[in-house]
Image 1 (tube, rainbow, N blue to C red):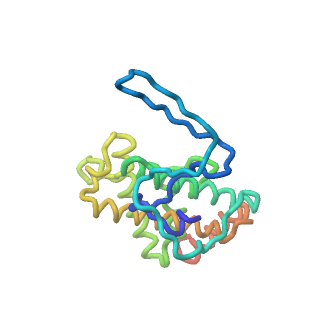
Image 2 (cartoon, helix red, strand yellow):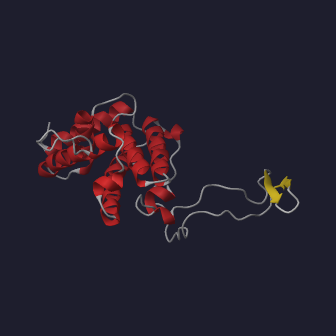
Amino acid sequence: MIRFELCRLDLPDTIPGTIGSWEGSSDYLGVLVYDKHMAKSFLIAGSAVESTQVVKGIGLEIDRYPYHPILKPEYGELASYAHQALMLLTDAMIAPNSTVKFMRVMGLLEFLASPNEYQTWKKVKGDLACHIAKDKTKYHSLLDRFRALTSLNDGNGNEIGYRTLVVHQGRYLPDLVGPHEELSSLFKELQYYASCVIRDMMDNPSWSWADFLQHRDTLKINLGVK
């Protein structure tokens, strides 16, 4: 929940470090030491003590509590999906580079649209857009944007959709998007899309997936697109 509420895909330096060892954890620590002059190595091991873990970045300063309580899968079917979505978001945040991060975020969006079965992006984009759009015009604008993010032809037979170029043609995202500022803007955009759907899930943790699909239909009817 801390990562969801307080961290950003485009700012990996402020993501909390992975769980390590702490005093009283009842685990063990070990280190392999090699002495070049003696040409010998030594394995030193013992029970865990208070330790320091080196991580990337400067850490995260928390000045407020997360808005949502921690979800547990046993709260309901939708809570279980939201919990899985949060773990997928974490995987994207800690990805080693922007190209892998992009692929993981797109996988998260597909999961949010349909966690139980594969759907083409033609169906996925509508099931995401209804959670994000405030009116019919914005809904259709989002559909166009999702085409550009996934698979889109420039009219001359050239593929320009990011997902197709990255996943199927092995291109690197920075080569497609441009400078760091553009990458940062893209990841903030994608995180916003994912967060809109995840928040709808977290607001209704006891719902079944069928209930959530009915909620989607209601959203689409209210937008005038169904």
